Amino acid sequence: MTAAVEALRTPSVRDQVSAEEWQARLDLAACYRLAARWGWTDHIYTHFSARVPGTEERFLINAFGLTFPEVTASNLVKVDLAGTVLLDITGRGHNQAGYVIHSAVHAARPDLKAVLHTHTTTGAAVSAQRDGLLMISQHAARYYGRIAYHAYEGFALNLDEQQRLVRDLGDRRVMILRNHGLLAAGRSVGEALQELYFLERACAIQIAALAGGAPLVVPDEAALRQASETYARASGGSYTTRNWEAFVRELDAVDTSYRQ
Image (tube, rainbow, N blue to C red; front, side, top):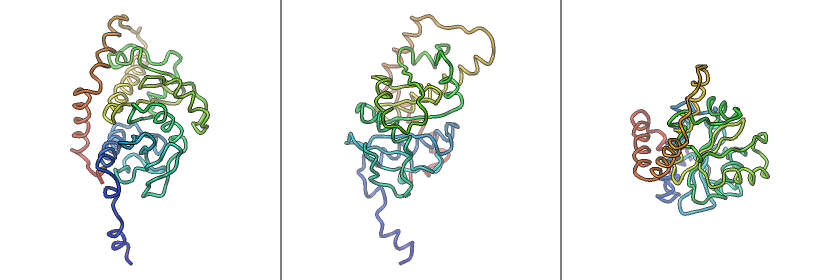
C-alpha cells in the first residue's frame, strides 16, 4: 500500500477530536506562531499549553523537537496530568520540563485554560534583577499587586518542585520564574496571550529604561492601583476578545499554515 493511500485511510486529527478541542488546537497553534513572529522563542525549549475543553485532566502542548513555526493544530500533543501521551501524530512526545511546569498549573488551577512560558532575553533579564518587575511603565502597572515570583531550583525536571511552583503562583495569573523567564496563564488562550504580551513589553521597557542610565520616575501607589484594577476588570471580556481577534487577523494575513 502506498503512503498516499495509507494517509487517506488514516483519520485526520480533526476527525478524531471534538469541535471544541479542534478550536482549542487552532487557538494554541496560533499562539505559538505569533510568539515566533515576535521573537519569543528559545528554539525548541519553551512551552505553551491549553486545557482540552470539557476536561480537567488533559491538555495540549508542543511536540518536543518542533520549533514554534512548525507547530500546527494537528501536531500538538495531547497528554494527561500523569504525563501519558494520548494523541501525538509526530511520535516525538513532550519535553519533561514543560510537562512539570504546565501539568502543575493545570492540576492546581482548574480556572485557568492556558499556560504560556517564555525564556526571552528581556524576561530572563528582569527575572535576574533583585527587585523584579519595576512599576515604571503603564505596561508594568497592569501587574501592580498581581505578580508572583518563584525561586530558581535548576532545570524543572523534579516533580517535587510542582508544589512550590503552585504555592508561589497562588491565585494569580502571572509569575516571574527567577533566573529563568516568565509565565502567564488565562481563562482562555487569548487572555493568557494578552497577559504575556504586556508582561513581555513591560520587561523590555524596563531593560531599556535601566540601560538609559537616567533616574527613573515611579508613579504613586494610587495611580498604580487604578491601572491594575482597571486592567483586571477588563480582562476576560470584550477587551480580551478584541485583542485576541486582532492577533489572529495579524497572523492570518501572513500565514495560515498553523490551521493544518
